[in-house]
Length: 228
Image 1 (cartoon, rainbow, N blue to C red):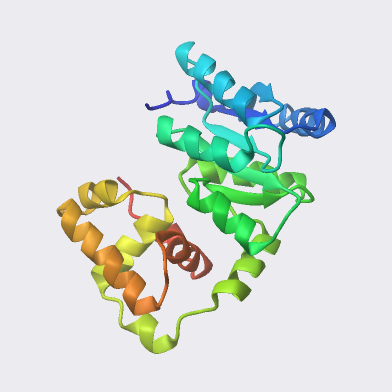
Image 2: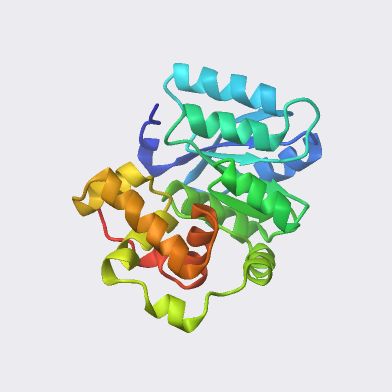
């Protein structure tokens, strides 16, 4: 299900966190940002799912959901997976106090568009919201360093082995496109797109699309994504 375009260019945002003071602080700052509109709050994953469903039904689907990960009941990772499965154009950005690689990877593999720490500067949060809405993958500086140390960098020979077409596929993958969307963008079959992704993973010695996307972002390839 697709979300409508922002009214007047404003990005509709939902805040999900079990601490009211955190939601209040985020709302207080984000309401001052001209192109952002807070359209809902929830204290746990189950409430977030109900809230987004109601907003979608009312024609005001959020464009970005800032999602805490550790909450009672339905946690943020589960809620992220369900939201991204149900709503194609609702981007979820995990926002938590924890920077462990397993937590970061779990959130991204559940479908999160990005991962920010709660001690991030306010401007970094605003930038993350805007980037997520553009289908980019916002990662806080501390998060990027953690991932770089955990995954390491493929050797130069491996990087040089990627073809020009595979570079195109990699940049689109980093922008969050599925195999089907990559195929449409490059006018190739979905099977060919899938083959390119497998080849990229093999050449770079990576295990998943998430790792490939993170590598592309670290190398600055995502910004080179062609326009539709």
